[in-house]
Length: 490
Image 1 (cartoon, one colour):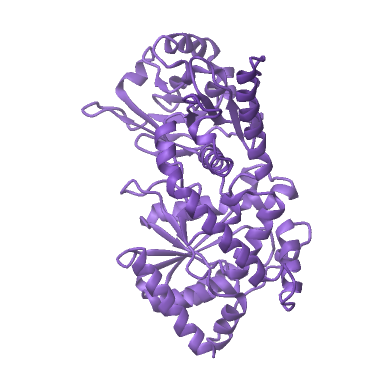
Image 2 (spheres, rainbow, N blue to C red; image 1 turned 135 degrees about the vertical axis):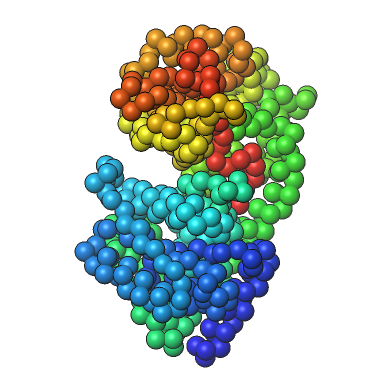
């Protein structure tokens, strides 16, 4: 039976690779050492060939045995003929988060390291071992967080790799989850039949983490056909939510094309405020479409690797609906912004529509980047791609480096210059682009001409500081990591 399951899995993965047009691409396998990812490596090596694969193990360094396990994964990859890399996270370089946020921060750093490997080898697709049990956990996890249709439709087969820089073809690498149709028992049986050693991470049973608690609930319910918490029941509801989402999304993209303005260089979205004689704007007139429109915009702005919670969307909706009710009644209209889910929404004025920008960061939330060489690209704040390079035909010393600051950090160094540059920008920029809430979350870039020199202000508030001599010889580009597509799969 296990041999039949393995053969079926190989054919299934081959079909997915061909359908996604990845047959001529080199694939990166995310292999943690668990049964699901070890089975993935075994299956992928037979589906596409070991030479077409690279494997990476991210060692979080939380457990003393993790280094030994990563090395064991490397030995098995060598046996399969797959090139393997180990990336160990160094927590002494960053402030270790509280246990409540440890999973989230570890996931972000894991994805960042995987993205770095993609950059090194110019890999465009990452295969993960997510299975049907993971899909059920994700659905239940999002359900208790009050996600909307967006979140309850679960994980998709393919999605953009979070926190990753684009490859040489300017495309962001994607995650592919080819084992979503397989359950954990099948992957265990494939490992046992193939003599594949795997490791059980004890932290996956730590009750302090909410996902582990949900995993236990599902495991206990999986033998009870009547339980609403078994995998089969959860996946049926998820599939229904996916169907609802697909129906709504068919018209959502064209609707947002007409009524949304995306400023990819600022990380800002503006939704039209005009109602065309109706009670609400077109994008907000249908509650289900409004929820998906807001979920798409909020997800694009905050760049989180999970959809916004329904409770957060309701806060935005409440202000939008009450705004138009007050306007229709001739009552005073509140102009107070709403900030939640990492996003600030600003009510419309005569100068702009509904503005969505990144919520103002906490003190020291955004770290100053290390010195970067000209031509390098930085992913700043997990949402903006920044590149500084010499203008064509200009000769710049190789010793020139640059850094990116948050506005708060930059104000300590260049308060007078920033205030003067803001005054200049107000003459040429749109009022919406110069709103204080928008400016507060923009990157500030400095250039250091030589190693021992003082850094010089080069870029702020979405434009080059032309009054700075160093900036006149540089091309500085800033763009959203998610491009301009608001309706993206999670």
